[in-house]
Amino acid sequence: MCGIVAYVGPRDAVPILMEGLTRLEYRGYDSAGLAVIGRSGDLRVRKAKGRVADLAAALPARFKGRTGIGHTRWATHGEPSDVNAHPHVSGPVAVVHNGIIENADELRAELEADGVALASQTDSEVLAHLIARSEAAELEDAVRDALSQVVGTYGIAVVDTRHPDTLVVARNGSPVVLGIGEKEMFAASDIAALVRYTRQVVHLDDGELATVRADGFRTSTLDARATSKKPSVIETDEAAYDAEGYTHFMRKEIYEQPAAVERALGGRLDDRFHTAHLGGLNLDPREARGVRRVKILGCGSAYYAGQMGAQLIEELARIPADAEPASEFRYRNPVVEPDTLYIAVSQSGETYDTLVAVQELRRKGGRVLGVVNAVGSAIARECDGGVYLHAGPEIAVASTKAFTSTAVVFALLALHLGRIRDLSPADGRRICAGLRALPGQIAEILRQEDEIAALAADLATYRSMLFIGRVRGWPIAREGAQKLKEVSYVHAEAYPASELKHGPLALVSPELPTVAVVPDDELRDKNLSTLGEIRARRGRVITVGHQELGDDSLTVPKNEPELDPILLTIPLQLLAYHAAAALGHDVDKPRNLAKSVTVE
Ligand code: HGA
Image 1: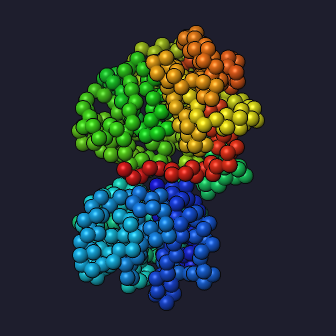
Image 2: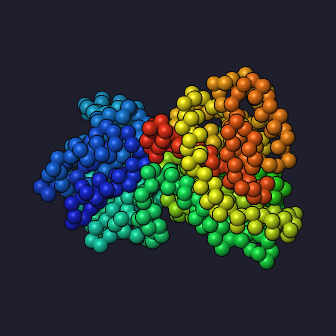
Image 3: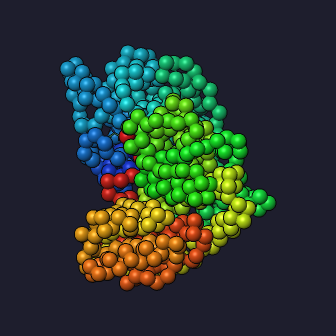
């Protein structure tokens, strides 16, 4: 959340920063701002509440500079407003910040007692004042002084007119990546802002600072020990960050799923032993046999995908498995068991709550695997091993292809663990064939888009909806409700179908439609009785399954029962997308949300 971009070099920084902000807008979009050091060494700052386009409209024609920083905000402290937008300025210093300064109130009080007038309500502004007040000769040391006084998380970028050819960036809990150009350097919170300019990047670690000049950079720790970093090469291309003719990234990403699933499977299925090979697991067969329990951690859709994963692992590998929100787990002093395999799920690999859960697990000696999309991200680096999704960048705030790819990776992992334990070769072969069929079957579902869009426009007129599913259908119902809420703002509540008569049946009426996930599996008859109970109360029923069972029905091709949930997700993504589009919402940037929750 929050996007940071910075540039130092011979070119005019402003167009580069504005382009970077546009690319980063999915990370926060309540306000945006720029600070550049002009040719005459003056600090020029422009900030605006609203979107990057509002900032662009507010920029004077001759607004130029060769060193600069930019920010798109997702407010945590202080409402979205021009004054609370970043950069924050103190004399010659300007700072952009991603994260939360936890002792900001005390620092504000101390600064105010010293006669400093704070302009904003943000926690971030204290950083600018602390840096400006430092007596250190070098900007890096001034930043170090300031950071030694703060408690909290940050990714920051700093400019100072006394050092017009220098940027200083630092990281603690919020990503910062450097981009190496030809006699120019970039920094950002996300490679999305860099891909247009360079392929060579350096990821900072927590507790690291970098002094960046046009001709290079040096890194060090907060206690001033030099560190050495090896640049890595970005593999995704620029086109992956473009909507490429689609009306929205969300729709583009829904349509990318056949290819994304193909990539998740790529080279991982073994037809000789009917299993899956996952290169980065770092878990030999003996260790895998010693696993007594699997615990999956994630937030939001990653948690629901983890719930699907837990079911797959329990069914195929017969290892007790469950999923829990990482955000809850980290706060409850969890008991960490040596024979439990912990798995952290995060699209960005930067989700702060998940990262902290991983760190807590590692501190207590737990073995943690990562299921992550962003290569080289903090969670990927923190884990003992893991599996990348290879889904390509996901830009829409509402996750679609990362969700599906995560479920596919869990199916591979469950197959792998199952075949080491008791899953028969015949069942292994069955699952391999089912996995191979997924991309074509997803493409088949996507061909029903027009029909789903018409139903979505109709459902968007209701105030509230119920989503139900039993066992394998339950995480699908949860994810379906989550997707609808996120992008259409229609209230949606998910319940296990089995729990309906224990409470939520009271809500059922002609005004509350129910979306029921009803696959053709061994629980179909139980599900049909639940639908009967809803109909008896004159509730409208929309089914998602293999047969036409509801007042309206969305059907998907049949795969293996264990893998059917992956397909059942797709119509619900399209339903949410089209409900939001019908209501005229900004589908890719839902209100109050942002991609990659890098704050607590
Ligand atoms: N705390 C800062 C930055 C917010 C942030 O990092 N969001 O992701 C603010 O409220 O401006």
